[in-house]
Length: 323
Image (cartoon, rainbow, N blue to C red; front, side, top):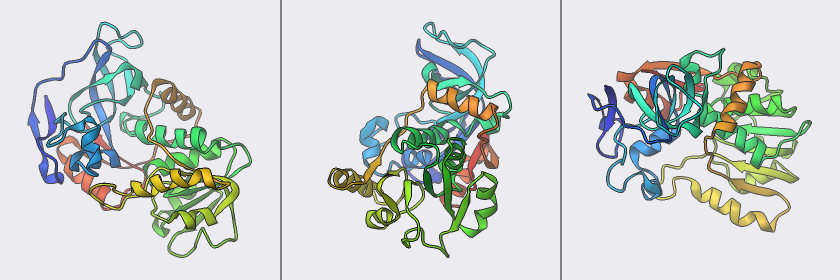
């Protein structure tokens, strides 16, 4: 099968398209004929091996343990392991697997769900990681309730576009922060108020929010807290500094350390795709409450180009790979 292969950590120059063996699946895994895959920031981290703790997390110290990158996918079940009960060959699925930048990928049955009936494969292929992150950030960590005010920083990105829609679907009043060139996109998602971060300061003291979801910024904790209600909740789900060791996670660490000593809740998290949350996203998508935003679709051979486009910060919503 054709696949993107990476034999060492590095830039997109480390990626090559090659013919490789079809992956073998474990007893609880599904073999998926990939029709589309998604590109997210996690792909970049695993490609570069940075920050370095990524390597210590089991992805390989000197080189990627799995040479075929890619996680988000949508496709058709080709075969199932003997312990798989929820899927059979021919089923259309979406979710998270291993080696999604290929014609075939393997995935645990617990990180897959039936593909939303109203989505193309390209749309479904970009949902799992970003959609799950937005859902878990707002529901589990922000604990958003109807009528609350929610500030989404980085509203035009992959997680942000899902977060705006999910917060609105949950009955919140949503203020979205993005660049001027992306205002129309964010407005179409249903945001009640939009702030151009180059012209407006969300921390000017005029408004305070019950929940702040910081996805795309690197604002200091003191600045974020100025915009947060006295009993509000701050959820940090992003922010990159490019550092080799911490890569921006130092801000998350400081938030956790400070939180017990202030009236506000300051937290961060690592999202995990799972069948139940994918089913929630599937139902909301089919009910018209959430729509994945696909900026561009690249063929498998142009994965390096797609990752560079993401790196440069141009993407509005998600980037898809057509396998």
